[in-house]
Length: 204
Image 1: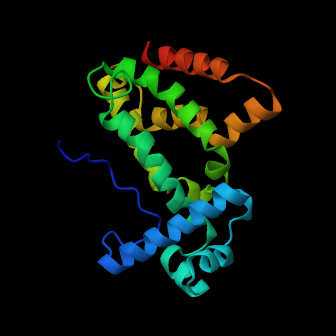
Image 2 (image 1 turned 30 degrees about the vertical axis):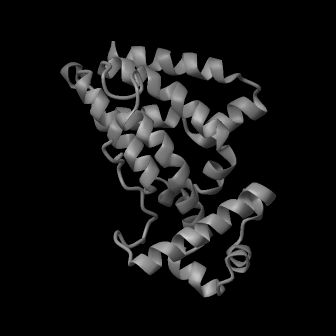
């Protein structure tokens, strides 16, 4: 069976290639962080707690991840890779084998349900506004949607795939969907229908 390939998701400032011992240490720290998040919730996840759980100095955690947001984004990478593999190489209509329009239609509902399942982590990992748009997971999603919009022919009607991809991403923004579902009481099915309507309007 061929090895699965996904686009690399690397925390900001992380070196792209790590020594074998560094890879093991990073995996150990992430395993400790994931266990703490599952047991106590993401809001209680601190650099001190991870260092203690992994039995290393706090400085080791800071050197590996930079700060708490960097740690959370590294955890998010593992979660995002599963979703990413679905739209990059999974079954149609989300993955290859369907038309660009069909894949655009499938992306929103899949993203909404995936993010809802991991909302606490997504919201905690966003960080400052100027930093959130540089996160690897968001860049991968934007690149994918811009590619589908080009394939769907939006440029033929004067559309800008790069900007329209941001429009689509804003619809599945974790903070917005948390507000709509938790505070406004809207069901995910209504948001999914709204995504379909938005795609139809963009594609024409």
